[in-house]
Length: 223
Length: 126
Image 1: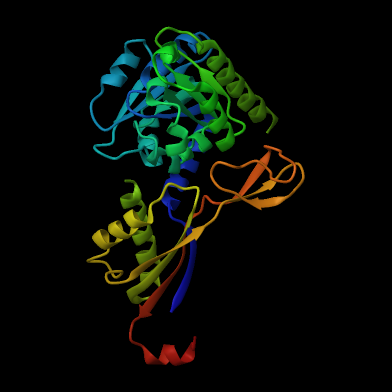
Image 2: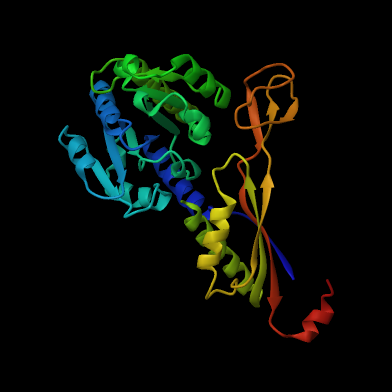
C-alpha cells in the first residue's frame, strides 16, 4: 500500500527554525548566519563588525565549532555576550542548537545576533536556523575559483565578503572572474572586499548590514 | 557529510507514518531532491544502508527523484529551466527571477506492507 507523505525531509529543523524566527521577531532581533571555510576569517570579521556597530546596536554572538571555546573567548574579551556551541563533530549548525543557545541570551536586550556557523562550504547551506540573512566569506588565499566548486553557498548568500583583500596582490586571485561567477550564481548579492584585521573595507559591509537591520525594523513597524 | 542526518530524518518520518498505518514493513521510500541542493545520492544510499537495519525499512529501497532547477522571470514572466550558473532570464536578460524548483528536499511517499488482515485488504482494493 502506498501512503502519501509530502513532507519536507528537514521538517523538524524547519519547525524549530520557525520557532526561533518568531522569538527573534517578538524581540526585534536581526540574525545573521555567517558561513565560510575554516580560516577564512569569520571571527575576525565578526570582531571588526562588532567594533563598527557596537555603539549603535546591542550585539551577541553564537559561535559554532566542532570543539573548544577559543572563538567565544575572543568575543567575550570585547565585552560582547558570546555563546559557544560545540557540535561535537557535526559539520553545521541546526535550529535546535540555536534554540538552546538563545535560551541563554537576553533577547529583549539585543538588536543583532551574529551566528558563526561551523567552517564548511557545503552543509550549512541546507539548514535554515531562523536567521534574517545568510552571508558568506571567502578569503583571497582560497582562490577565485571557489564559487565553481561550491556554488550553493554563493547562490544562497545575501552578501559575499571577500576577506584578506590586503593580500590580493600576493595571490593569483582573478577578482574580475570571481565577481563575474558570483554574479552568475547570485545576481543580487553585493561583494564586499574587506581586510577584517586591518579594518579596510569594513565600513561598506557594516553600512549594508545596518541598512538591512533598519529595513527589517521598518518592516516590523509596518506589520 | 550531512546526508547521515538527512537519512535519519527520512527514516524517522517514514517509520512514524508507516506505523500509524499499522505497517510491518516499508518496501520503498520515495523522496525528491532538487538539483540546487548539495545532496549526493551515493551518500544518501550509503547512509540508508547503514541506518535502516533494525527498522521496518530494513531491506527496503530509497528511490530518489531528481528535480531540475527552474525559475520565473519577475519582469517578463518567462518560465525557464536553468543550471546553477545561469539564473538570468534567457528571454529578456533580467536578473530578477523567482525560483520555482530545484531546492526540493521532500519525502513524497512510502510503500508499505500492512499487518496481515485479509478482510481489510478486500475492502480496500488498490
